[in-house]
Image (cartoon, rainbow, N blue to C red):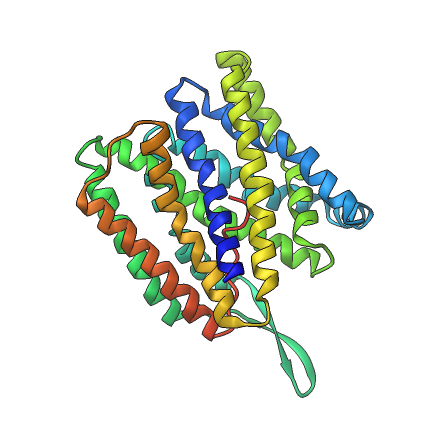
Length: 322
């Protein structure tokens, strides 16, 4: 029960990202600042955690081994993930972005054939090409149908162009995030813990964030105090607190596959937290019945996908560090 509660708390802090990104956009903040400031602010907090865990030296050694790969996959995993999410918040409410983001589960499944997994045999471990988890993917169709319901309702209030400017960037992000993270895990081969890897990818993606911040400064000048403060809250809430809580929750039940699946499934509640957060703090109206049904389908689909994946001993942790 404790692990599930920690997972729900993590989902709450992850959801802050979607609400505050929308808030900054409504207040006239440039999405380029929203994207770059979050990663600038994450570095000191992650650095403190990594130093405290005595992992900094190991991280430096790993980054020196493959500098180009770190730059490339960090740009894809973090840059092409978070920048499109911030961009999409300009064209749709946070709950819509949060709901659409759940297709990352499908994206992650479709990327499986591009990776190799280690299998133990009588002659020792061998690497075989991954296969798309058909059974799990079939459950993902529930998620996709739920997202479609949400988008259909939203399409009644905004133009087709506006809808596409939410769906297309979030879809790009949904593929970029698991691709970049899995490639980096593959390169590190277990020599780095999650906090060290996230810090390394944040540092390696700095050139991209610096470019975005320069463009933001040239177009709109420096960020407002409000946007800077909210970006700091996002960095602490999502990049630090939520990540720590989620890792703690999974550590508590790492030897129990059914409980681990329950913890992972709690992340689907991000959608509801994002919805209620916008209603309470941004004074937005409640979505229609069709949208609510769509969100419930997304949650049910994620729960079923998580349990089926766990029954096949497939670990899906691609939603870390939203």
